[in-house]
Amino acid sequence: MEQVTRGNFGSKLGAILAAAGSAIGLGNVWRFPYETGANGGGAFLVLYLCCVLIIGVPLMVAEFAVGRRSRTNGYRAFPTLGAKGAWKYVGFLCVLTGWLILCYYGVVQGWTIEYVVQAGMNGLAGKTPADYAADFTNFVSDPVKPLLYLFLSMGLTLGVILMGVQKGIERASKVLMPMLFVFIVVLVGCSVTLPGASDGIKFLLLPDFSKVTPATFLAAMGQAFFSLSIGMGCLCTYASYFPKEANLFGNALNIAGIDTMIAILSGLIIFPAAYAVGIEPGAGPSLVFITLPNVFYQAFGQWPWLAYAFSLMFYLLLAMAALTSAISLLEPPTLWIHEEFHIRRRYAAPIATAICVLVGIACSLSMGVWDGYKIGGMNLFDFFDFTTAKILLPLGGLLTALFVGWKMDKKALLSEISNERVLPQTLIRIYYALIRVVLPLAIIAIFLNELGLFGF
Ligand code: TRP
Image 1 (cartoon, helix red, strand yellow):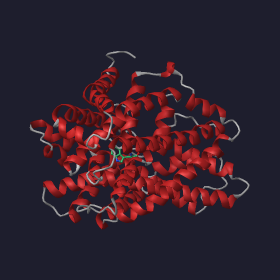
Image 2 (cartoon, rainbow, N blue to C red; image 1 turned 180 degrees about the vertical axis):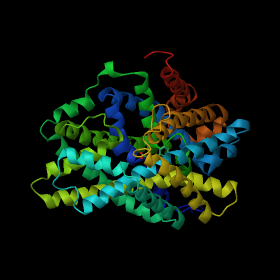
Image 3 (tube, rainbow, N blue to C red; image 1 turned 30 degrees about the vertical axis):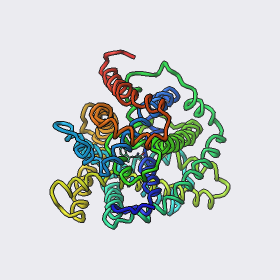
Image 4 (tube, rainbow, N blue to C red; image 1 turned 60 degrees about the vertical axis):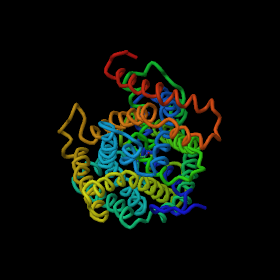
């Protein structure tokens, strides 16, 4: 086997697992249900699946190709592959986007740790649905507690980056992610059998297209970018460690498939439970946190110890999934500071983290004491989420597609995606058409539609 000369991955398969670890995170379990709930359910799901297939998978393959070809990170990859002029700055856009995402991702990652603690101290037992909702609101609007968890979550992420324990995380993920999957499946079973759950299943699976607005398209596209970790060169970095013989299409399809499955299964936990206990599906970022405890304690009500063990394990796994994603978000800014300012990694990483924490504090406080400060009608947390997922990631994706389709050496691209012609020519032709024309037009159309130009 060829020697891995850079980086910290234990094996080349490890790089592929790490890419999956980056994709699977809070985006699936937390963000997908709340975006689906806020955007009308089934119709959103249909649009989301279209975005994953038409935009997500081809773009993931493009990021993989760029990464494996250039053998470098997302921010360096473009110049390495011959980008000139303004194209060189695409890398910077990617770094910035990752940074901004992490500012609020770290806040939510902190919430998951609070729920690990709550579950561990048996603080979730014996409460009514109204209590769970009130507890969550009190917690996130508290001016101190969520900040401490933000420090803790960012500290953990920084620790992994600094100590280079990717290897350990990678090995742990091999066990933990399948476990998370099993837990999710069991919870789906619990949730759909709650009394009154069927309305929730209908909400998620029966599309009602009358609810579709331009914002639904944009939300579906944003969620696809966010959940698949595409649009900011994050996956380039991982792909630079992929083995030569790794099939980029196969890996992209697998990762997107697993990612989407986890998202849909999470929806199948959240909505039946939300309908069963009378929580609004459009409750926003709080949705997962106030519905899940209900599922644990209603489903396992007769066996409190089981509810205890199950909830504790579940939140631990969720926190781990968030950690592997957060690492992938902190790495690009760290590298950028390290290379651009010639600062050692062990200083660059804390600087990148400190900036996230400072902005993260503002995001966290905007859920409570600073709720009065609005930008375009949104508090800071929502504003960051909106700008990154719905504007910057698609913009990064658009530029990546244009670069790969029109600027990158065609031979180089084809040899990467075809693995020296192992793949059928027709597939490659379709891919080329998608990345050059269909994908950029789709992204532009969704942007223009949002501005009211088409009126769908
Ligand atoms: N995809 C991750 C999740 O679902 C979040 C994430 C990690 C991400 N790296 C990214 C999103 C890069 C966009 C770009 O939780």
